[in-house]
Image (cartoon, rainbow, N blue to C red):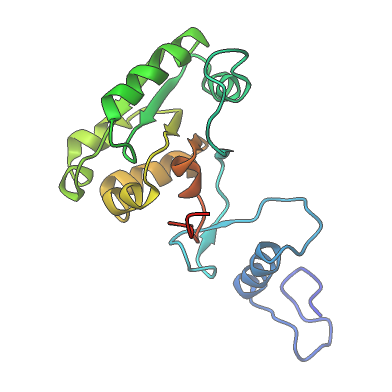
Amino acid sequence: MSSGNGKSNGNAKAKSNGKAKHAKRARHARRGGGRGHGIVPAPIRPGDPNASVAAKGALIIIGGHEDKKHEKLILRAVADRVGSGKLVVATVASERPTELFNDYEPIFRNLGVRHVHHLNVESREEAKSEAKVRILDGADAVFFTGGDQLKLTSQLGDSPTYERLREIFFEGGLIAGTSAGATVMCETMMVAGDGN
């Protein structure tokens, strides 16, 4: 048993390596263990629990079909987090990105977000372009719309745009997503069901 200070308290199996203890605690928390308090560090690279760092950002994960006409409670929560900062609406998963951006932009502006920008990526090459990465400069939050989560991950995964998104989150920014935009926020992603 470890005393928590990196020193053994007499148990031969105690881990004196703080990283090993941290990784074990993170694995335990991901399996549902722990007491439900504290921040579980996110892997620096997905799937690598031994190389992790505590993220300062927040996630808002929306199941989809959020209210866009009445009280807009969940979109209001996103807008409240952004305040007068910069929100990037990412329509990468959508087959109709311009139309979807045109739906969300006035909603977020009416909820008080002054700076609403559009990020759409149509190919892996675009995800590698400096122009797409620059859209994310100064972003306080990124909102991923619905669509096809496989398209979203295929376009962005392991690209400079993806790395910039991770930086935003780890530096304290908000990442929000609805439907497909929510599905991509976990390490294991559902792609399709049996149709029922």
